[in-house]
Image (cartoon, rainbow, N blue to C red; front, side, top):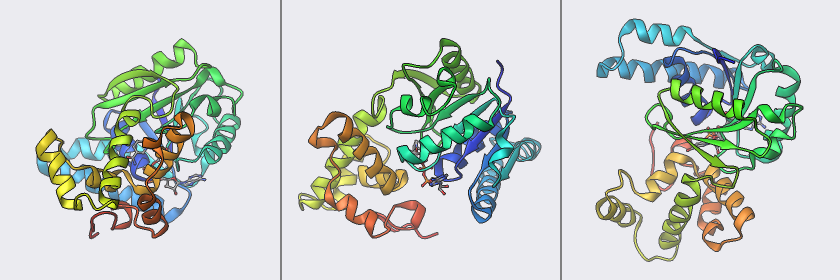
Length: 284
Ligand SMILES: NC(=O)c1ccc[n+]([C@@H]2O[C@H](COP(=O)([O-])OP(=O)(O)OC[C@H]3O[C@@H](n4cnc5c(N)ncnc54)[C@H](O)[C@@H]3O)[C@@H](O)[C@H]2O)c1
């Protein structure tokens, strides 16, 4: 099956990023946001982001207008019914995602792929919440989706070869470089990245070094484009705790157990860029 119409559920950091990528790649995109006001935000963010690309000269006015015209933002889940592929990008919570997959399964045309953008959760548990487990897989974009070239394709035990091939073709048409990985928490990147991020918070919490010195050290010593605490702010601290919890649940390795400071910051509402403050202030 050729994918032409893409549905996205969730209008947060990743939903918005993937909507931009898919519309620029020429797909018709329907984004479902739960609330009308966040739907409006997404439309504004999309216009701004595409506008910046016009200023930089990587996009012309006609391409921007065409990309914008291909995106519909709605609060109505039923609008996804005739999509060929639906990518779920809601909160990193297994129960919420399972409920959504059950709903999507009843709603979306039978031959469509239902995919998750989860960072760590077992995709097979989403597949078995549907009557089409062979058509469910993970398509894990990275943040910010328009800038990052990697997509991890997660193959649950239940997925068919056709589903994986179609998911790969979709990622490639989005201009990404896909890799395939088995359905184990953290896949490749987060299984390797999150012990590092978590241990950076541990250094801070234990008073070993300051925030700025930790980030300066990893930029200057490893040539990373940003330090671990700045990266946690970009990912979102709530999402980061959810990722660590899922990794710890799977492997019971202390490196994955979220450092208490991370949980306290989430409790305080300091979630990173998306709330305007995390380890750093992010004036909006
Ligand atoms: N932030 C990252 O760096 C990153 C990178 C790759 C993948 N992901 C994954 O993408 C998904 C979304 O993450 P995000 O960073 O965009 O989060 P976010 O907090 O920016 O957005 C989450 C969205 O889900 C909506 N939502 C929350 N609960 C819901 C529910 N019960 N039903 C429907 N919608 C609900 C929220 O309103 C919000 O629009 C997660 O699975 C996350 O693990 C995140």
